[in-house]
Image (cartoon, rainbow, N blue to C red; front, side, top):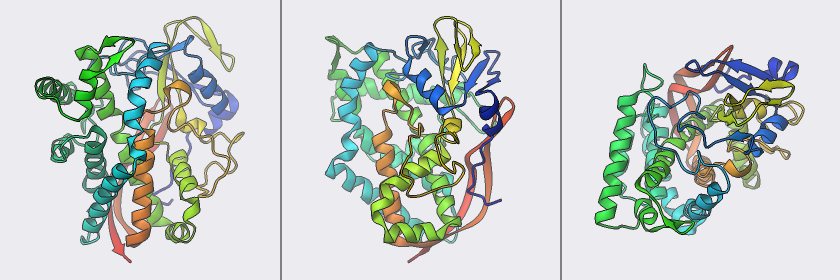
Length: 385
């Protein structure tokens, strides 16, 4: 099997029952697998809430390692809308010409550097570095901060042998605490200072609200961007004709980005908590129990997507949910799409081919399912044009 492939483990269960079940730290989860049901559930915030105990809607649950609410991720309407009104303009900045130029400079320099090497470990030496340096632009902070973040590894809450590492999470929490306090004393032009000066519904943000926004900004777009970038490189390595096609047909690059994000689904699922007894696709859901919106399964729903297990670069009908759906669509989606666009433009310009030397897959265990989300290690050789 080709190394870039991401098989769909949910196919049979999605077709036969539409739901599956898994245990997560003795807090069971009903997994919703069909696109229609995922979208309907995501939209129904009154019955399926995000504003539950902080950390509980994440799978695996983070209740044991944090009590700070991630905002606006763990807030429901109408307050959710107020926070989005504050945050959306800042997170749309990647559309600005100056931002795009700076991001392009970062990515081109990184690609030019790896082109000189005989071997590049794409997860730690490329994708993590790309994500961390790009984050300095999103936060509008000093570029040297990226070195600190790179030192945390590919996930800020997980370590090599521990899916919920409280000590590692504390590094992020302490770092954010220090940055907020520093910005309060010496206001800057970064996101910390913007939040300290902001109001939501006529009230200044509390320290914990600012901290919750920053935790989400750091954690929400870290391993997901790393997975998207690493999987994309593996895809182009084994499909060099696709790189040639995009070079010759730049008008389809936007669709290609959406297709790669659909196929690889960098985040498998996200939870909600039922506020009342209800049901999903004829499965009973008890009040205060958890469901998951399984983005990865919904993205392969054969009733919606033609040839869902194939990467079709110019796919026209593509209502994927890799960035979520409804009011809780991903706050960092614009930033992620811009990273992917500039990366592909740079690969087209500077790279002739990519050779995979060796790899170790990153496999998630989700009850009865095992899903490849990316790689723990992917050694490649980038060949210049």
